[in-house]
Structures are given as C-alpha cells and as structure tokens.
Image (cartoon, rainbow, N blue to C red; front, side):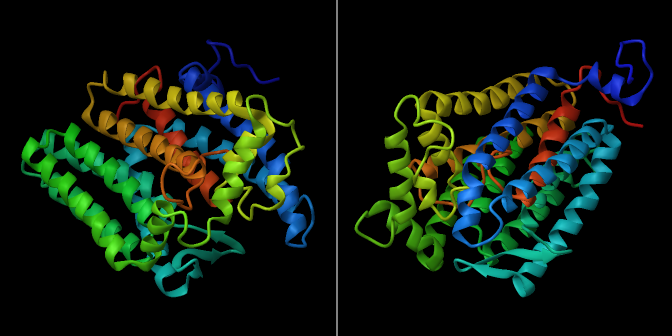
Length: 372
C-alpha cells in the first residue's frame, strides 16, 4: 500500500503535502461534473448520428487517465522544467496550427482542426498556455537583465500567434489570447498610454474582424438581430434553461439534448441547466469563480515576477474560456465554439486544460519550486 505520510519520501507523498488542495479539489470536482454531463448528453448525440450509444462517453472516460497523469506530472515541475516544457510545446503547437491552414478540416468556415494519429486535434488550444508561460518568462528576464529584449520577444511571439489565429480564423481564441497578453503587459509595468493604446487596438481589431471576416459578421448579426440567420441552437439552449427552472427536470430526463447538435460540447451548460436546474448552474459558476479569485489572490502575493505573470495569465485564460462558453450558451454574447473546461466533451480541450491546470498547481505549491 502506498505511503503518503509526511515522512514518506516517494513522489506522490511529496506532491500531496505540497499541492494546493482547495484548487486541486475544485479541479477534480469539475472533472466529476464533466463525467456526469458526458453520461447525460453524449448517448443521445451518438444515437442521433448513428454510432454506438456510449462511443463519446467511453472516449471521455478514456481521456481522464492521461489528463490526471498530465496534471500530476506538470504540477511537479520546477520553474526551469516548466520553461523548457512550454518552449517545446509552443513550437510543436505552432507548427501544427500552421498546418491546419493547409491540411486542416474546414468546419463552419474555419480551419482549426487537424487529424493526427487518428485523433482530431485543435493545436491552438495548446498554444495558449505555452504562450502565457513564454511571455511571463521573457518579461521577467528583461526585469532581471535590462539588456535582454524580453518585452520585444514576448510581443513578437504574441503577434505570431495572433496572425495565425486570424488566418484560421478563430476570433474567440484570439480574444482570449489578447486579453491574457494585455493583462501580463499591464502587470509587468506597461505605462497607462500603452494600456489605452492596446485597448483601442483590440477594439479596432474586433471592428475589422466584423467588417472583413464573413464568419464573424454572421455571428454578430445573428446575435444583434434575432430576425437574422438561424438561431436554432441558441433557441433550444434557452428553452433548456427555461424547462430546467430552479431544480431541473432530473438526471437523464432532459429532452432538449435530443435536438441540440453540440449538446455534449459547446452547449453542455444548457444540458446542465435543464436536468439540474438554476442552483446547480450557479454552483458551477461559483466553482469557476472560486478557482480564479482564490488563485489570483495567491498569485498577486507572489514576489517572483515569472510566477506572478504566469499564474495570473493562466487563471485569466481559464476564467475567460469558462465565461465565454457559459455566456454564449445563455445568449449574453455571440455564439463561440469554445468548450467549458473539463465539463465539455473533447479530448483536445481536456488535454489542453490539464496542462493549464497542472501549471496553475505548479505555481501554487506550498513550497516554492526553485530553479534547478
């Protein structure tokens, strides 16, 4: 039997006594909610497209194993190994993201997915956490040694990713990446003039995307004018929340998932609303909010600039992705194909989220991980 006492010298014991347990338990609870939602939503989706009823559920459960392994492994990394890992991940993910422009599968006017070893992968999901770490690294290096042009390198890396995301196009991912990068710039000591300039540039970019990218124009117009375009999924989503009321219709008793094509992925929050009701939905919102606010509170007390910028960036990324998924499901913002971390079906999303979670836990260990 594995010994996890404080005096034990094995890796699991050391990890258990240094990991931030409130954060860990919050992430595990999200995984549990994800399994429950996979059981509720995926069988109906699989039946509708004519495959094995439990196909998606089996795949969801299968991805939990590498997810837990990644979280444990990454959360055990030192700062030095986090930098090395992120550098390698960035260039692999960037290369695969570039490949999607030529070899990717076109879905709804965008090329974001590529088939690799029999799996459909969205490489840009892995660029996000890697970019966050590299930018934090470069900014902190310049602070330690002004001769290093760390800020310029960080801006270059961001622009590199931004250009590729525009070409796909993936404006939602670009928005998250830009906001996180802007937060890191601000915390690094960006003068207020440049803060205002960055905000103006971001708003101008959204305006240009609306004017010149038909994919974005259609979604925004559909959001602003209910009489424009097809609102089938949003209408069904809102109907699900209406049917669920305060306490839900009961696990497995929802009917809207029969008609929602993306009930297991982008609209899984609607399934939660119908079957478990308002109070459980609020519980999920509070759970995500706790992770972000609790993590931010700890990060802002950090004296190491690299750890501060990395933690805040990763937490902002996690919170923004969650907000975009839930808000678009509730028709508070234009619909965006972005998953709810650990709760939506999707192997690519789950593995990318596990990297984010592992990194967050690594920077929140009770004993600081010093460079090797």
